[in-house]
Length: 306
Image (cartoon, rainbow, N blue to C red; front, side):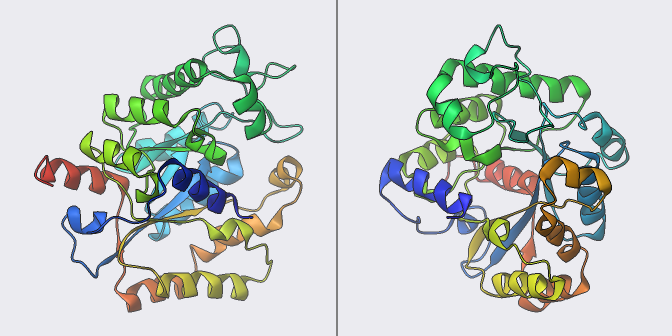
């Protein structure tokens, strides 16, 4: 099962409700039939290949938003791009796991502060289940704040936050994710399936999305034409409201194969996002591209009226 389908199941289990009416796109000032799209690239800062792919996709103009894994080793390598492009929609891909065998990272709060977020090597756990089993909500909140602090210290703008591998959408941790987002007025990845939690986010002054599209992680084809076709079909079938399309723009190089076990299918997102056929589909369908930064500006404008 796609990990984003699992994420949706987590959210629905919290409330039992589905989509809100009107759409959150309408609440933020778009028309009822407008299809608004954020093409969002995860995993910036994880490696040089992730940084290079994200930068090229942003420059091409289809990717509108990225998020950075602050505990990872190539975060400093993203600084030059941000200095050159300070208005980039850049969020934090809040990271509580370190899932590769030979390429690991540690919690920024430190092992002494968050022992439940470390394994026998002092690294973040390699899967979500271990985080749920061993970490407390207090430790998770400490690590969220440590990752925000590092971004602020480095001078990164923080336009939004989401969750690597969906860890923060688990019932044990979602309230802390929401708490910090509302407190700091940083938009977070949130959709209507979360019911009362989504309402809390909206009432707390933050935008809410209508749909998440994360299917591409399960599109493991190495055929570019086939992958472009899958994306084009998805774009043509977008529903009204705001869709957050999650992709991974890994640019092929020798090192990334060593890190991730030669998962060549990941290169497809990068290639699709610099392909003119994808751009043509978006233009033909009249899709409105936007950013999390614009969503927050529109939410601020709406205020408490809706």
